[in-house]
Image (cartoon, rainbow, N blue to C red; front, side, top):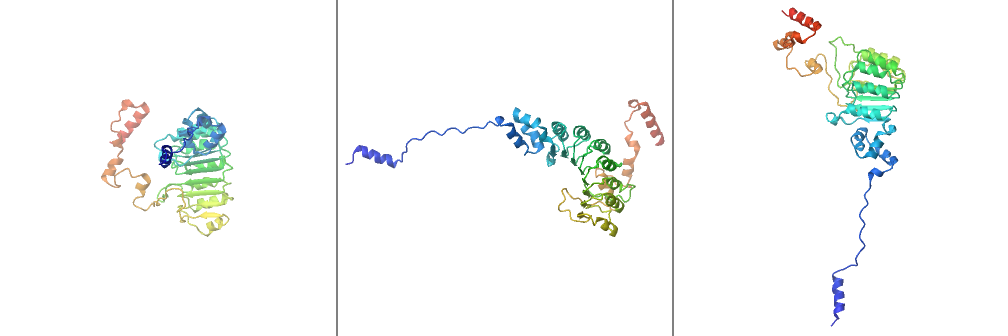
Length: 345
């Protein structure tokens, strides 16, 4: 018979008992607030500026200081690619904070839905060294604001005004050409081509202003109304062009003279060329002889039909005078109101 001790050893072996092991030390937690400033700065430089304003600036004092007090981080401000947040964030306010943090060193500002009249003038005062200005879908500034600001950007080399519907008239691009003698890249993309054949609109007003930008190397005019006259003026005066894009500019008829002028340009995209690589949504052109021209151009907010009694009532000025009381107006307005009422009797 085996001894009891040997039996116990065999049973212990079958149970597979192992000698006790040393305890595993707890995993060390990193304190992100204690990262060196250089490391924090390297991380921030890899982030989008909208993300910086929304996130790292709110982490802790050291991260907030790195995001706020380093002008180099804000030298090239990029606020593109956040169109889905247009109604949730105050982009112009965030843009102003970004420009303020640049401490006068901003050389590039790119914004989508991020620029209004006030921001444009603030940028003009705070960024005297600006070289690149790209504005996309910015509707809250007009020609007057652009003219006032652009004269303070003498070093500007790149300008984009894509889908900015309220700029382009009154010779504003002539002002740009004179104020920015170093401008090399200009992009003016419309949301859709409109045919103004039946109106007194000067289709070449914008083109003649662009013709003053003598140092241009790259020009994109998408959906513009310029004609052969306007394009010829650009080609005659912008002798350094290397790239020209006039897709959806359907008032241009490329005759032999224009083709000869374009011969010296390396890359040319013509009105009917493919738009597969275009950055924005491409809409069908709207022609003056189409029944929907007025509705498409003016908007579809009215249900009134032209040449109908309802439309006559809609246009009747008297309907806008109902509820207007003279005692609420100053003397000049009261006189105007009385005159209008007399004319309608």
